[in-house]
Amino acid sequence: MSDIDVYKEWLGIPADVRPPDHYTLLRLVMFEDDAEKVRANYRKLNAHVRKYATGQYLLRSQELLNELAKAMLCLTDPDGKVEYDRSLGREAPAVDESEMHTVLQYLVARSLIKRGQVSEIEHFAEARGLSHRDAVIQMKLVEPPDACRALAAELRLSYADLEDLLPDDSVLDRIPRRVVKRHSCLPLFEDRGCILVACSDEPSHELEEEIRIRCGVPMRAVLAVPRSINQAIAKYYAPGMREEGAEESPAKATGKDAKSAKPEKSAQKPAAKEVRSKSAPLTEDQKRERLMITAIATCWSIIGTVGLFWFLNNGAVGVPQIGIGIAAGAIVFGLMKATYAR
Image (cartoon, rainbow, N blue to C red; front, side):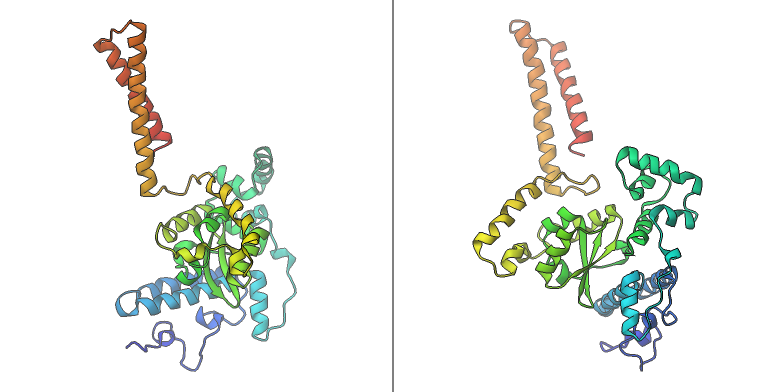
């Protein structure tokens, strides 16, 4: 049973089609151009294959789930799809400019916002220095996944729901935690000579160069909701999970000498002082440390308040003054618990 043909047994793909192309794998007609249909078929097949993700089939089912994800991400990436279709013999279709939307045009076309709201959103975004994606979320007009899909359409990138994906450990091990934290990204898979990386926005040239140097191949970005990326980083880069060897600098990976690696060390210092993203959860050690600091601050506020009364009353302190000190400590504890040690 270990040699089970999962394509045939689980997906009903005839044995003479090996390896199946992306369209066959996702049960689509050849050269299907409707990205929403691609995603819909992927979701159905993903849910179906997950039923087998237990026992002796756990590893094989995950491999198939990753194949499905790679196929979906390729066929929903406009430029990646053209390249893939060309490899299957399709002539590159003419670009339909009517399908190229900005974030707001995409949302209007799908009736997620009204046309009359566009100018209000633009004004809100400009006044606060926000992108249109972030503006519609802050105005509570659109859910984050829909806003992220709209940005993906504008940037001509694919969109990924990270809850449906299980990144490849071998790829995660090649990119250290400090890099993914600094760029708010998550490495996913290696596919057709590229590293697929989930990003919260259009990737910077710095990130693209970092991935190229570390992995030896270029990256291909897919967009994901920022909060889901932060949660995935906390999950897949928890302390002790990743290989320490991945922490070596790109300079070492390319064989440069120690002098050329020095700028990398200095670049790490500001990264260590990064402000924690509000959506990224604290580790258990950080929670304990902050709770300890809160307790110390509470004790000193009580001691300081009682000491002040002792000084003002020439060394005399009564129960009321001690009660006031305890009340002051409770206030300090409450404030720090709500803002710092939560």
